[in-house]
Length: 295
Image (tube, rainbow, N blue to C red; front, side, top):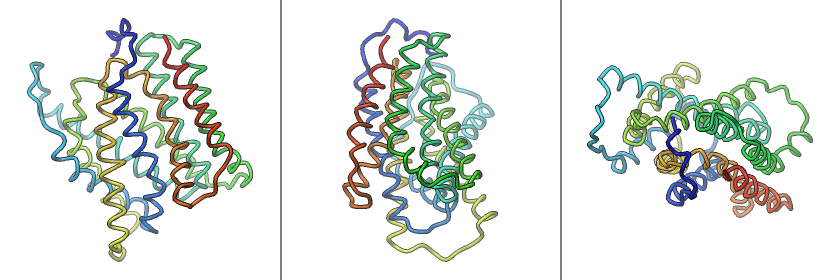
């Protein structure tokens, strides 16, 4: 898939900038979820995805390509695949955080950059260099440094359904990122449609599993709109741009910065108290990302 990129050694700054924007927006998810109140997870997913679809519609412009366009049946299949992965990732993530302790769920969810990095590097090189394995371990340890102590102190809660949903989230995001690198899929151009179809999917699931509840407040609507437009709208387009870079396989490890930045934002907002582990975790993430990015 990415075999033509082996001769490129320069780090992709435009791609890295797009990935950085996506990571910052993803790190705002905990704060926005707190602001969204007690909305059921699937209903929150449907509303956020709908907001993302409406917000990204003017940004995703169709481009004429010389390559042959997929057939109508292939286009439907691509849309359904992308939307299913997106609905699974967002819906499972919100549900996991409602069923399992957030620290433990976050630790499992953010294994997806490891899965993506290892899989994409394998597709490029047909092997896993020691630098990639070592960098992935360092970056993951930086993220784990923030969440493992809370998970250990709270003990095993038995919320296995939440843990399985968190792992499902990780798999969905890793698969979505890998699928975004297939040129013929053109997920960037399809993003509003993918978000809209995913919103319909999670909305149907919400009606079937959560029933009908009272209308959300204006504050919850505003937080949900921000959640959809930012982390699940603009961020998705930015990440798709990053994955279109010839050195996209180097960017997966940067996503480990999400839990570190999320903790920093919570500290700034006064939701949680400062912790000495934050700068150490950030250093490990940067070190690991640099190590994994080396040839």
